[in-house]
Picture 1 (cartoon, rainbow, N blue to C red):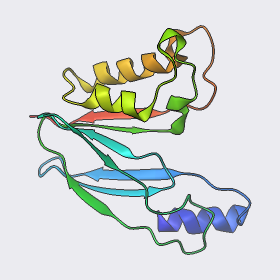
Picture 2: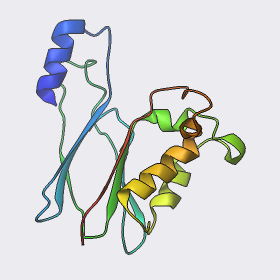
Picture 3: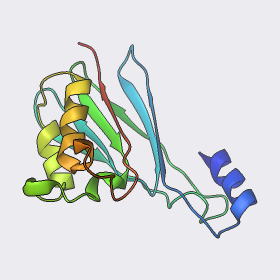
Picture 4: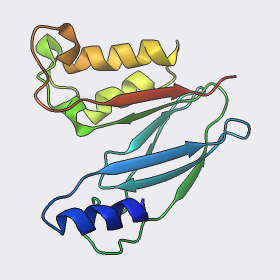
Length: 149
C-alpha cells in the first residue's frame, strides 16, 4: 500500500486521491492482516454473534507523501464472515426500506447464516442498485468472504 501511495503521488501529485483497503487472510490459521487508507471499515460478522469493525487509520492514498500505513491483525474463526465494500453501498435510496446504513449492514452480518453469495445478494439488494431499474448513484463494490468451518 505504501508503494501504491508513492506511485499514485508520482503520477497525480496531491491533486487526486483514492481510498483502499487490503485484507490478506491465511486460510489455514484464520489470521487476517488488514491495512486501510481512508476506506470504509472492514466488517466481520462472528458466527457466534456480534460484528467487529476494523477501520482505516491512514488517510486516503495520494494525499500524504510517505504515508504511514499500519497493519491490524485479526482472527477470523471458522464460520465467520467479512464484508469489504465501497461507500457506494450507502448512495442509493434503498427504495421503500430507505437508505442502507452501516448499522443495517451490521445487523445483516450479525450471526449471518447462509453462504457468502447469499449475503452479498442481500446486501446489494438493500442498496436499491440491484433491482435493474436504474444505475447506482455511485460506484458499488462489495466482497463477502466466509471462512470455511
